[in-house]
Length: 137
Image 1 (cartoon, rainbow, N blue to C red):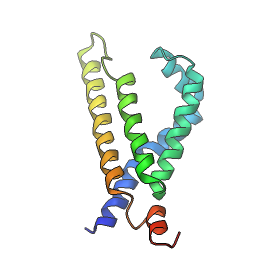
Image 2 (spheres, one colour; image 1 turned 180 degrees about the vertical axis):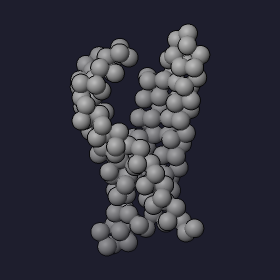
Image 3 (cartoon, rainbow, N blue to C red; image 1 turned 180 degrees about the horizontal axis):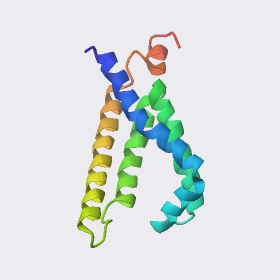
């Protein structure tokens, strides 16, 4: 498969995680802020709005391939921080819940790796970044 097609597929798959997550967070601010409050975060409503907007906007930017290296680096950092806050050491004495949180943490780390690779590779020719680089943007 050509490089640009793989980069497009990568962007689509990564965006498919963040765009719906951002919509969900914004559509249920009370639930999202309740989750953040349960984690002991200060200002959980502000965190819910910020997280929802960030996930939605960053996901859309990755989807269309605009400012991809910067946005991908921000999303990689977001994944590491979100995994550490939301999953590291969670689950208490319930082995099944602890295992699930460990798997979710590893998923977040893997997604961060995908974003780091995308930051290095760029969005490819089939993107806004690619059109700008080719002088057609």
